[in-house]
Image: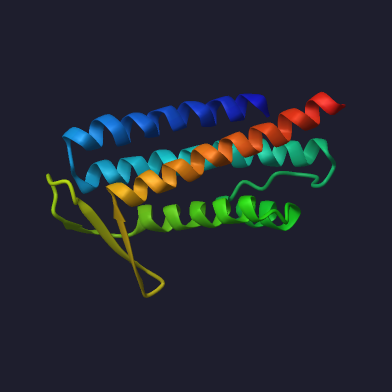
Length: 154
């Protein structure tokens, strides 16, 4: 459980580097896609930690292997708005990564990736990806404190 949280923290460091170094010098949609891929990996590690925590607390018997099932199970077990919002962001990121995005203003400050998901236009640019990163940082702190405080109380 703690190993998964540490792996998530390491992925977040990679996301930080991609946003503040790679994206700064290479303003392309490919870098945005790489950031999204790292963010998905972050969520995979966090979800693994949450599900292991749920197994220890006997809230669930086994951990599903499919990402969609894992996310839905977490949303079912934890009726917490922060967790639900982050799982929904995880699903959005997965859909974005699988989409065939349009590229706009590459090599400029306003590099933009545009995808259509469920007939809705979804735009990702430097500002939006930075917001997602901030959400993930807060989520890691939230989950870590939830798990660590529960471990210390037992």
